Picture 1 (cartoon, helix red, strand yellow):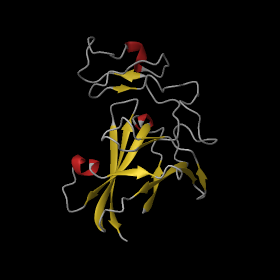
Picture 2: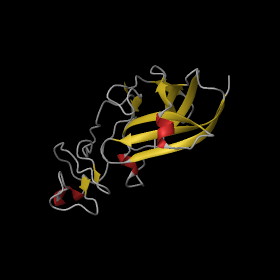
Picture 3: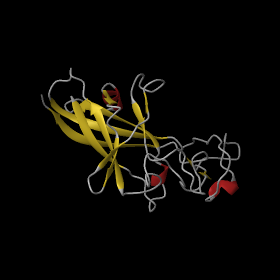
Length: 201
């Protein structure tokens, strides 16, 4: 069984944090009658149909693209993740410290990094409340990787990403909650969304 899932790109110029949402996402299921916990969703990870990812344009046309998928070295072990196929360009301030960061914070933000500047790729502090994008913050317009099509980069609401996932045949029909998780690469952020779905045969 396969499930077609349109996924709208959620990077937008008007929200200061939204452009930092880049890199990897996954889909998971949890039976609706069970407690909706992270453990439940992790127990039912869904694999992508790797040759079905595409870019959806506002007129409804779909451009098939070659996605980038990873299932080795992932958590939970063996779970499949997809790279967001829209490369970033300018993300926002290079590094903003968290409220509890000090001069002794490892990889702490420097004062010159608090603005819209570029610099060498370096580790981020990864502390609560910090906002750091030292390796994918290119203000000269160079994307972080080759875009899949013209205009398919940066912050836009003009296109969507189509994903297709495999629903395991052993799952019984019934009510489920589909969870989508987006883990950021450049910042310590995790975004998620859920939908009620019904599996039928």
